[in-house]
Image (tube, rainbow, N blue to C red; front, side, top):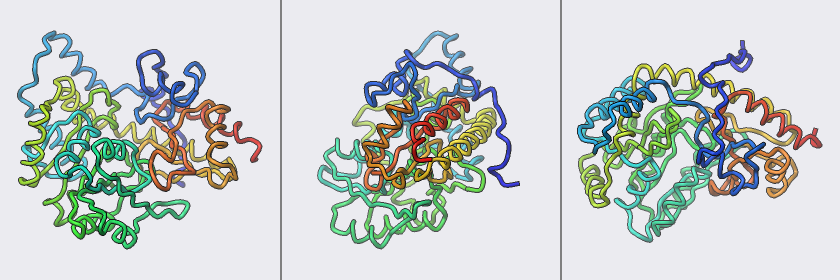
Length: 401
């Protein structure tokens, strides 16, 4: 049986409709202000958090803290560090040193600290676009220069163009590169050869290589995620960033894990952290420790199966709209949809999605070069809402049938 022919199985952990409107949710309560999509009957498919409760082990850890009732400063974080090490070893075959782990206030914060540690104002930072929009925002806010290396796209799959990128980066003043692995928004899981190519590119241009691996745990069958740390000869310039935030849908915890095995790099990062006065919050430490556990692993396996079903349903619905295609997802819960074949300009297809379908989706140009004809849709919601989104989009573009 073809994998995409398998029946979609319900799962009460993810089928539950949780009304997030009026809770201060960025995703639901800001979509009218940002996109003009009313919250009362709109669908929020933009901000990359999901509409699912985290596993019970996470909420139980918070409940235990609440029951204790004293919320003092965090101290001994050994259990937190060991949970990260266990997860890396069991899920990704990594060996992580306890002293290599830093806790930041999420990975956007982690990105900012990396930029601050290893670059100066006016230096370039390389991005492989289209890519997660917060990278460029942080780089520019720090008065650094975004060097956009646009990926190859054959209409179905994204790839690397190292020859063109070499020419582009030469003389650019770049000191750092940020790799999104798996990639957001196109959902690529980089192969061993591609990762080796990125590492060689960093060496050729003497770049610090920051590997943002926040989506590493949501990878679909037939694909295998490899951490950048698995590449030979890259440790002396490698900074790996991971997090429970996307995987377990706890981004409000604002905690990220930055892993640096090289002692020289580690010392520089530690000094910058100390200079900025950054320390973790105790709630975040408890949530990470609880999530990175056998119970958390079982929940993630169920989540991946469920998102894979949402992906299949959404792709099938998009395929029914002539001239509109969704890039096949290998990982993440974010669908990258190309409207270039519809014959519409960006203003028209965006208006149809927002005004007629009443769906808030991220605008492609915010992800940099190569995103002009795209919208990004968040599939991390109960399946009935994916069904509703597909029906709305097919009606909005019904004249193309």
